[in-house]
Amino acid sequence: MSIKDRLAWATDGERARALAYLLVAVVGAWMSFVIVTNLDNPDRPFFQPLTGYETWQIAAGAIGAIVGLALSGELLGQSGRYGWKRAIWGGVFVSFVGALVAGTLVLPLFGTMFGPFSLFVALVGRPLLAVVWIAHLAGAHWLLRRWRQERDSIFNPLPGKPRVRRTSDSPLRLKTPQDWLDDEDAALAALENARKLYTPEDEPVEDAAPRPVGLRLRSKRSAV
Image 1: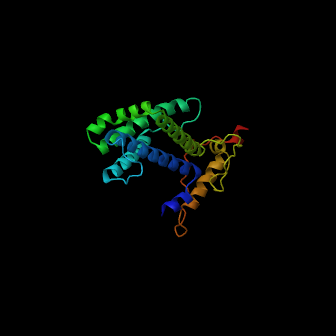
Image 2 (image 1 turned 180 degrees about the vertical axis):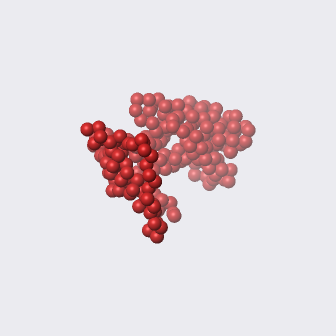
Image 3 (image 1 turned 90 degrees about the horizontal axis):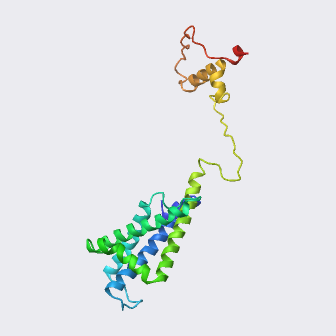
C-alpha cells in the first residue's frame, strides 16, 4: 500500500500525528544544517550545491528530531490544565535528545558531547532561530493533542455529545446485567442459547446436567 493510500485510509488524528513528525523532521534537518555550517563554513553561499557530508548532516538532524519526539512519550499532546506545562518539558526533552542523536550521527563522540550544547548556543545567539524552534514544538504539541483527543474519544464520550447506550442483537443479551444475576429463567435461557450457538448442527445437543439440589439462583419471582 502506497503512502497516498495510507493517508486516504488514515483518520484525522493519525494525519495530525504524521504531520507532527514531518514538522519536527523538517525543522530538525534545517537546524542541524545551520548549526554545523556555521561551525565549519560560516561563509558558505546559500545556493551552493550540497556535498555528501552536508546531505548527511540534514538527514541526521531529521533522524534525531524524529527519535526525540518518539521517545518523548506522553509529554507532548496532553490537554487540560497541565498540558502546556508538560509540553515545555517535552520540548526540552525533544531538543536535548534530538541534538544528542544528530550530533552522534554527524560526528560520533565529539558530536555526542557538543550536540546539545551547540543547539543551546545557536538558540541563545539567534533569537529568530529560537522563535522558529519554539513555534515548531508548539505546533507539534497541538497536532499531537488532536491525535490524543481522537484516541481518547474511543473510550470517553465527546463533550456535548449525548451518551448512547450500546445495544446488541445477540440472543445472549436477554436483559440487563443485573437480571442475569437475579432472574433464574434468564440465566438458564442464556445457557441454552449459548449451547445452540456454539454446537455444530451435525452433533446432537445433550441434555444439560441435572442441577444439584439446594443450589438455586435467586429469582425475582421468589423474592416477590
